[in-house]
Length: 268
Image (cartoon, rainbow, N blue to C red):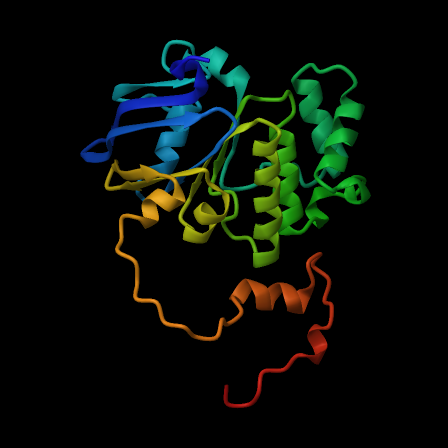
């Protein structure tokens, strides 16, 4: 496979301004097929602007971008057929059930046997038991999983996840993380934007930090850690992380477990 074909996304010199505000100032990066690429940055860094350009919702002022070998400016319709975009807010119809949402999208994509498509995705995303319930009754994590499932109808080669866990509780975030990992395991290329450091650390094969309209660093987690000198090692008793405490108290599957028996001593 040539280097070009090994890359699902190629971005070079991307620039975008809104009147006098220059949001992107020459963005360059590539994303390997079947990998998870995290675009990390604070609010207003330009992450969503990059995603909108790559998904053909916005035109760049300068630079080039190719998705699945297709130019986003001159082959926009073909690009849209090969990608899926999940925005910051779940785009599910709350009046419909989870299964009805999936069937609707499958019909819009003119797929054969939309009912089977919906049932397969409900099983894959552990939503079968909730499939007949209205989406309005779903938890935040369930709603986001349904949203991602809807995005996968038609088997897009590339999926864009724009801040997929914003507003979710810790348990729901972990559910979405597992879903994203499974997407990559199945060969889907995932580009996700996030402002959460732990999210990028947990999920990404490569991480690019977008700051003031430019990519200031791009590499694996190990490569990024090498940018700083190692801290002085002190041998101390390992304390549990907040995640360890949270999962122990609520249970790995979101049940309350033995949480009622745990108390923080007074004054701590």
